[in-house]
Image (tube, rainbow, N blue to C red):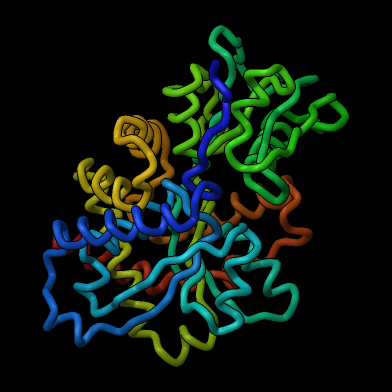
Length: 352
């Protein structure tokens, strides 16, 4: 009997075993893909740390920059670690324990509202990489079909709650609570079980969980939120204002590497697959290949370049406000320094 328990690639399982597998896979792929120098070059690299909200397939731009050798090409040796939650990455940077944070753009707004000085420098996820999954045969034609239903989500302030909330309020024109929508908040890996045993009608999921739920438990994606929300700066890379002012070369090198990785992902599906296999060795390659189709073809999650437009920022602010992760917005001109990403994108376009 299927338990419905997804062993989440982001949290859970045996930490020691996962660490060993991840280290082995990542080392092997780095050797296979790194085309920009060996041990001699490594001696001249600047070692830095990047903290991400949680370990997610949609952050593949960062992983591809690492394993594809793009960070190394630009003189960086970046260690990536997970903060353990969307609200935890920025504090890691503010404490001095990491140089870059990758998390929801709204977290930078919350930090600035509390007196911190951070700035968004690059787009890492450019669209809502979120799907509602359900049992086969479940009909859903619009966001209005969520009225009166129960949705299994991760714990607030997860985007698994923010995304459907925003879609219902902004696109559907109704308040979820008043429309009888209930969010069943469960631990990572438990959403499929909630749908299978009838406690929830839908589960809102990221990849890899969408493809795992389909392959292992027979659930199917029935609604893509990106179809009604459109492009936005859903996840960004951010640094302190002090770093951007005092060491712009490091910020530029990071953005140069990210821009090259994002461009490569658009044309090289195998870069996505090999990078993801290294970062998530516990996830079957068949799941990763299915997710690649969702993330690269059926959505705008993986950006073509790291620039953040004002329209994308404003759309994200509306999204974050409706979802409840921020209480006030802050303007693009204050929160985004797009110059690094623009220069990086121009270099990639010129190299063409």
